Image (cartoon, rainbow, N blue to C red; front, side):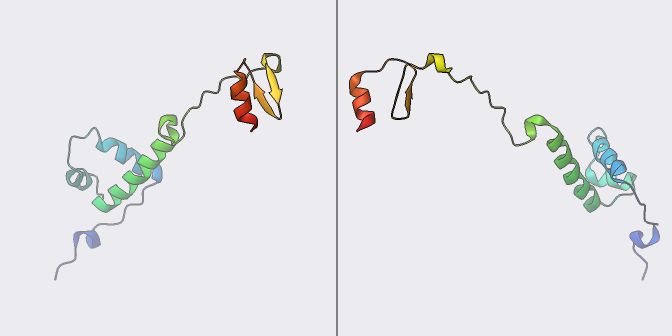
Length: 105
């Protein structure tokens, strides 16, 4: 029985920076993942592991992909813009008396 190719080849220790560069390089290679991995002495499973980490890293660094939305807050009316305050209800413009009656009942 012959040893598998992974047993014959020495293990290559790559840094995370090396792996991120390999993952980024795949996009411009015009190769399949299998071909790219063979040319770079990389197991496809290892490539996919680092691809997932790379995508998570790039999405986290991108403000549009962070999961947060930019919120525009309008200035609240200033105290001088306050029309009336009744039992803690602040009104910033004139309202019909029937509206006030409904609020207070």
